[in-house]
Length: 251
Image (tube, rainbow, N blue to C red; front, side, top):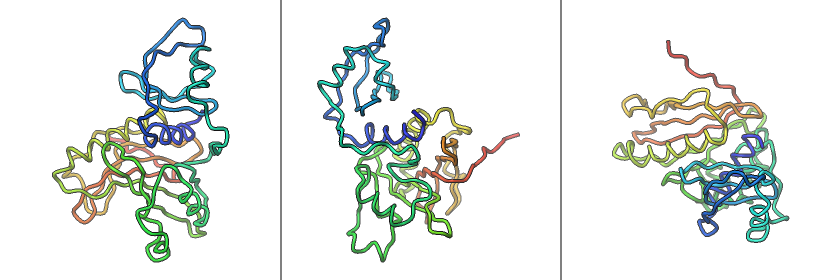
């Protein structure tokens, strides 16, 4: 399973599915020679997502599990056959680079991951930026969605942004959100090209984005995680962009 698919599955299963299905149990490998304890988070027809006791979340092929575990998944939590197959080109939820505005609006309305905070009759006046947010919190905060378009009107960047908070939240609530996003993106996309520390608040300048992490997307483009300051408020930002961003080399 490629990182793009993993990111979509993890968001749906880890962040945006309630805890009602969470159940800790012992899992065994296919041969039955090894085992580990982990909490079931969700699965589809081919993959299961589990949180280990050390907190690490990962997704693996169901056929790598022992037959008793496969039977447990089928009997207790059968996957819904009518669910829409995962689009391997999806960057976030079902959104893909190159989608036009009409496609993006339709996908957002049908999404199980995000919700609108504005009556749809106002979309024409205010646009899409900031009108959708994640249904569940990530590291204690919701993330709002923002979009950038090419001159031809096609999607070329998706940003997830927390609401701006005061300086008193920079080393607490915002850092918790940054930490969870960094762990999630690293688990799903592998080792980042650049992995920096949480930026110091005094390093930020108004309306500038300071990236601490960079990942290369499997289908091309980059994912960036960092902090920003807007109008004196601080926020965490994840950017998915078609551009291939190179890490900053420190001498």
